[in-house]
Image (cartoon, rainbow over all chains, first blue to last red):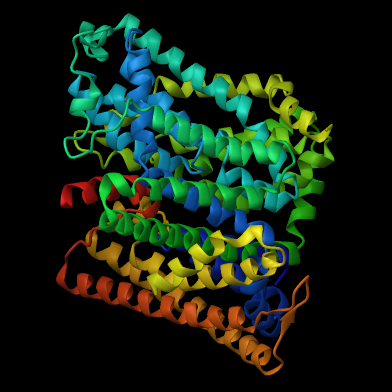
Length: 453
Length: 162
């Protein structure tokens, strides 16, 4: 069989397996195996299968991933999201849609300690949606806010997706993480603007005048969670986030330690914070929480690395068949200006993001797209942020945005409601991405400072 | 299984501060990943695409998923076998990783086939469930991805349980 035909067959197998509901990791591995067998024969396949699982996972740089996951999970158990939500509600309640703004702030704040948008959406959604509905927000509006703002987490460092981008392409992880800060802030403000405008135009969506500056309001402290032990005004959570963020990003930015070390220290700090709660919740609950955190970290890590192993098999096959170089030659030979190629590569991510998770997309698309981008003379870090933006747009787009799927589990929120709520945020996301596309300085300025130190 | 994986995670924590531990963390991480695979399968953390099978008639969906699982089992089995051979060779020669400190890597090599073997068992259980469901026409509700579970269940449940 000719290499082209083999690639076609392998792609068909991949699509068929994905459609059959086989987990992405195993689909990639099976399709890759089949391809290598057809292309190079069973012997090469055997030796590849024997050695690749170790080679593709035993890399020091990869240690950063479980560390960031652990930090996020521990922070979730330390209830920082709830704290920030409570605090920002107190500060923002005089603004129209104050509770909505607080939800966005909570997402952004939690995003500063967690690297996964799905985790952020789930964590914040659990608290914020119930509160918003209690105050008369329409469930579509409430779900839309959280699903959209949940995507902030992959832009605001730490971000597991950006770390993976660095590992796949060889860009500096520290630079990638710092590059996400300004776009993250811009996106946060843009989402907040949407909420304010919507709440002004149609106050009934945001619970009418009820949510406006209700001074005599018992406040969220009483209503948030009757079982929760009395906590301060939420400043503790903010302090925790600031501290973790300073350790991780400050440390990387100041050149004190590598991304891996920063992540490990962050996880350690988060663990200490959780331990400090021992006075509040007792030893047994604490031990349970830590055990759960570790188990969650283990399963999420394994799931990510399973995809990594599967994808490296598939990529090994693609490289053997010469696909990346052929693809690069073909795209570079297209009679269109470079900008069009970049836009096309970015637009492909949206449909992919609708039904695959960000990690798989990165692992499949980047080996093909990244060489083309750098060959065209574009900045790899700038492309990273745009890629992340596009995947996130896919994550909140109908018919199956993963973030929306997560929220649909919340009581009182139906899938249709959530997508209706999202509709207002999608154009804003596209606008923000366009802005970043047109003004690369917004992305590259901060990491540029890092490089010039 | 869980505790082993968790144990490795926590040991990794202390990692970066001591010199030479980088090599160890690398080897430990391999163990963590492959031992966690089976656990991830059990809690449904491996994300797949349900979009198509959800729209199929129930019986067809079970059949399709069963076939998919058989293929997955096949691949994992072959991978497990090959990594086992590599691991045994590595064990015989006491393979080391050269760095600041000499770190033996054969334990990590050996953990890969062990983890894959456990994954194989979990996959077989999933397959069994699908086949049973196929015969009894019951729809199995799939587990929510672990990442999604992350915040939705735990802290609140724990509080409530006290």
